[in-house]
Amino acid sequence: MHTPVTGPSQPSRSGPSDPAAYASFVAVGDSFTEGMSDLLPDGSYRGWADLLAARLAALDPGFRYANLAVRGKLIRQIADEQVDTAAALSPDLITLVGGLNDVMRPKCDVDEVCALLEDSAARLAPSCKRLVLMRTPVRRGPVAARVLPRMVRLFDFVGELAERHGALLVDLYSAEVLGDARMWADDRLHLTPEGHERVAEAVWQALGLPAEAEWTRPLPPAMRAGWTARRTADLRFTREHLLPWIGRRLTGRSTGDGRPPKRPDLTPWHDR
Image (cartoon, rainbow, N blue to C red):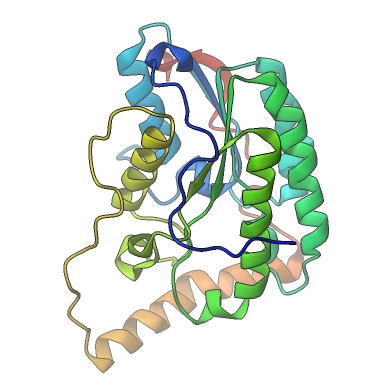
């Protein structure tokens, strides 16, 4: 039986507070972990995993980091292309996030998604000192509402999975501030730089490291845009993001096709 998703949860087990316990980190997942849309001046993406790695590296000069995440990947692709690589690297810390791309699609076998997550966690947990799983944030709105039952099933299962494998569970979905539209980029699919900063802080705290900010802090009250501004934004979103996304779904293409991981090897942070 699934446990209902409620408010922001505490980790299923408390992580060690000794920073030296995290001398190496491998991130596994899709665009959320790759770092879209936290754009850097050179056109690359940073994101919460890079931010977390930089903070861990500041505590340990020997820290090493790999990020295997690739945008657009479904959970089967993550399981087939990233999990064994991450396990073979035997890092201290692994984050596994995936499945949301699957449940956003019109036809999705949630049971199969959960089974692939189960298999991935079972392969990763023995290969690291600490496995971190997440209930990912979701922009509140009509698109999310249409697939909400599948999301809830997935997030309930992630909680059960964390318990079974002794993983840390970071519940970003239940943090109201991360559902705020102002935390999301123009494509309405990826977090803004501030959103990524808050996720990095959430994982940092879940690892038992000293809080540096209140990641659930609400944004100031929003002023509702006028009708014309809202319709203009909706039309721009449809033209620039929604229609291309639908086109890729209809043709079986993905933004990640042929794209290598951003950091395929476990290397020192200063070698980035």
